[in-house]
View 1 (cartoon, each protein chain N blue to C red):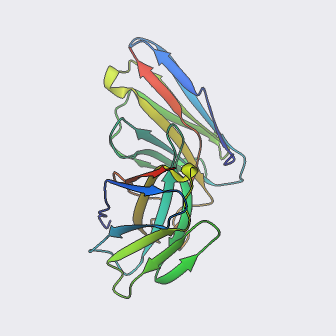
View 2 (tube, rainbow over the protein chains, first blue to last red):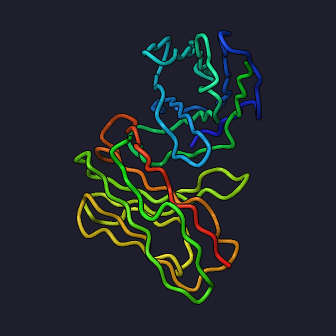
Length: 111
Length: 116
């Protein structure tokens, strides 16, 4: 399973765009990239998933370069309620339940 | 509301007690999971069930005993726990496992367990 590396913490202000980058240098051909969000004392919540190029949904965008060795989660115009821990996960399609959660990125959004 | 409920939300138990954590999913999923999240540590996958059969047991001590009577319910039976077992225990479900794409897991709110 591919190991991921992401910043331990980030600070931002309301209304700003936040980009969290995750490195996964040994990503395999059949690996997908998934991001989860976790608020204190709650379970993680799926945000977005992608394989290559760009994926966008109502919450975020995910940018994946051609070599797929990194990915960037983009949160447009964050609010205080976006303060949470964000996890980048990489896992294979054939054993898709084997999600390895790292330490995540603790995002603090200030007023 | 994710469609996955857990009870109790908080539990305090002594090392000689026996208790059970309950998880129920209302999503029609076939796979269910138990995770442990200790303070300042990443989530650790404990057990995985698919169609009521255990498919993964990640070297979890025998004082944790899972039970999956049907695809909607998952239990974690606890006995003779240690203080270091204090953690947030999370249940999750997904449609299936290994269906050719990475399954989204839906997590419950967790049970905060304190072992004295």
